[in-house]
Amino acid sequence: MLVQRRRFDILPEMLEVYRDLLLQAQGIAIAEVTTAVELTPAEQQAVQAQLSKAVGQQIEMRLRVDPSMVGGLVARIGDWLIDGSVESQLRNLRASLAR
Image 1 (tube, rainbow, N blue to C red):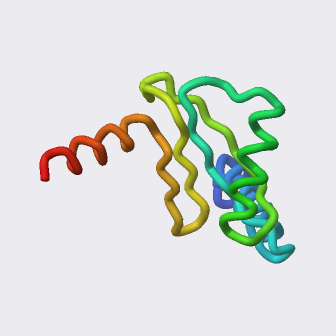
Image 2: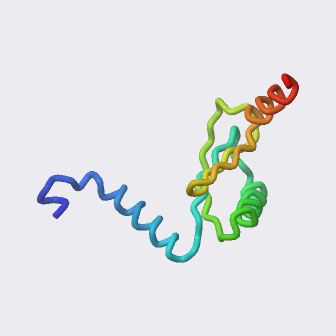
């Protein structure tokens, strides 16, 4: 059907959506984690354990490096946003000092 309608190019996206649904059915949450630098395997395990503890589910992490970040990490798990970035912490500090 995809070939007939010349939509074969969306097959990788369809596979990713199917995989996400399969993980969700197995009770595994997907965490999109963005960091300033690449994490070591030990750091990845520590982050995965903390996120799993926070949401009460097993976590599959999808890592992304964003060199524009100063430091820390940002994790998105479904509707949750866990912002542990240095920029966010500085913004919060600035706001509390301005009071």
